[in-house]
Length: 355
Image 1 (cartoon, rainbow, N blue to C red):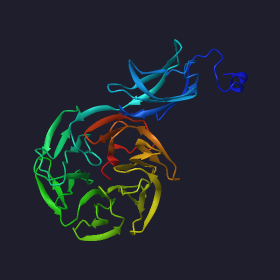
Image 2: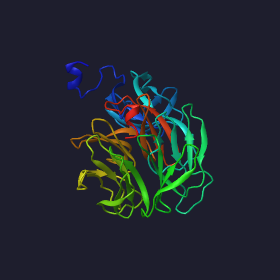
Image 3: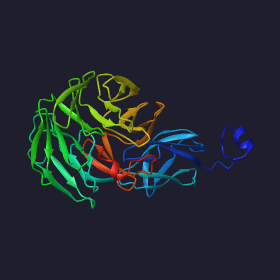
Image 4: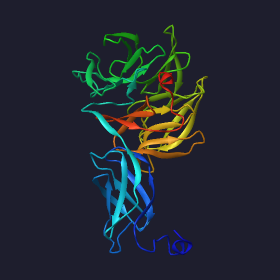
């Protein structure tokens, strides 16, 4: 684009559409992305056409220099183009998550073991006994029942040895689950036990929805580690690379925060301004990735160490995520899990995942 074009308000002289950027650059089907560029709307003010590969996406908002489009069901990673006045723009790449299992009910992050197998809950409503509590999805994406006897399976965590632990928000118990799906009680009387996470010393932390973060030492002694504002649904926990515990928990506010709790149990607000923040993960550089809304858009929000937040993945209904092998992530919505090829900087190596 020449200087004269810019002086004319960023219009292309020939009027052909031009894409400059797509944000965010990754999405789930149903997610809304913002496309910026020039000449993106026809001269007669009709809405342009946006295609994701061979599929057309709905245009939510359009103007000459930007539009918002919804990624259609069935779309896959590849080029997105805008068409106006019989002309088609340059292609711009977008990464679209692939659904791998549906008809589930995760309420927080999925779990990923050291071999790359995925574990996801069918949690059910409080007090509901469901036929299968946890499903196992192997590396070929075959879905099989894994755990059947737990009421309201909630959060999943692995210790450094690969041992699985699962919380139940029904009975306030954290269970130790063997590879064959048998379970035994590890810690009881955890209130409405929701999020769980291990620190580097393999102490286990449990979020009680009514406002307490418990610390369970390796000898199973239980301490009150920190006290927070009660959550309307659950606490979600993840440790950063410097030993700080990050916690989310939706409240009745539409302007919720991420808490940071240092190793001494001191609580501070790390970031405020999210809508219904839920499951989260932390990369090796200390950046947070939270299933939440920011500026009214739902998806995975990246929050840097400097406290800057931006939508990294667009998608409705997201409740959690987990880093996975091959520089990818597993994203959980209220009823499904998706695989996202996600070449982000600072993604943990597979050996780092259980920590």
